[in-house]
Image (cartoon, rainbow, N blue to C red; front, side, top):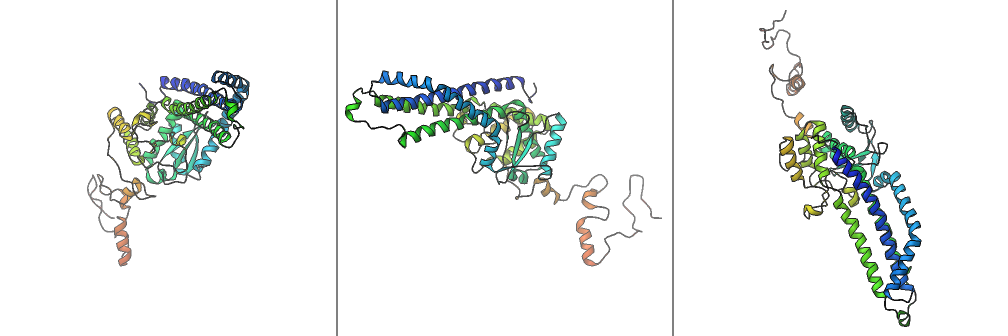
Length: 392
């Protein structure tokens, strides 16, 4: 079974996305009913059943306005969610001239599999993380931190990009954006409710004689419980975001790059180093790794790195180096390897290391002593495969 673009996973994500949108409207109606119940309890002298009935009538009357407001929120978030995320994280567009290394890696990866290339964003941050956003092909973008670019080598960055491309292809990104929209809408309505409550919007002069019905206290208690329920349900929406999407994205990256070891080493380097200052929890849930979790995997949106690495070792044949230390900032593993002498090839030192006039160290020593860095013309070279070379 192919790991990239699993049909059943894509269909499941589409159903979840639709269910989440329906759930958003239900949660908004629940909050509107709680607000109406509180308003009636503060202004009407009646028993609990009467207050509940009046609040229901208020909900029916306010439903068109609540529906329109929620729909407007969805439309605004649909077109401008990337701007909101960029404002929160400091992301900026990354063209080929701005980040040629990153751009070329993503372009080559997309060309090799015939994938429409998403936009690139770069966040100036020491954190090691990346995430994808968008609702359709015109909006899809991949955001990478400058810390990730400075600490991972090309193969590891390519694996991270493959991970995010798989999220896009499998529909995970669309579902996560919808979850962000829901979290924002519920937070907005709940904050509006509490502001009206605490700043006098729902309060009116009530004397003890006006509370003969005795239902106001119970009605307010029910309203508070409904608001708490809405918060809990919005939190439980995270559980609808199956953690299997991260395993599938890791596997999809391996299928794209054919390099399980690069994906494993990238995860090991990112592990615990991905905190994005200023980013909301909803944004962190889109990232390759979410370091804000750690109270057990039951309520986490990401499996632990150990679990993801173990899956890659078991099913993709990768090798786990264990927790990894990072090279100095701005120096990748490839750059560090350049300082070490390469192993001799079948005909001696590699040309990249020694060059036509010997090693860099030997050339430098000759320049200091005043000797010519070029070998004498009469010096015979090492024997080749067909005997010694002679100077003529």
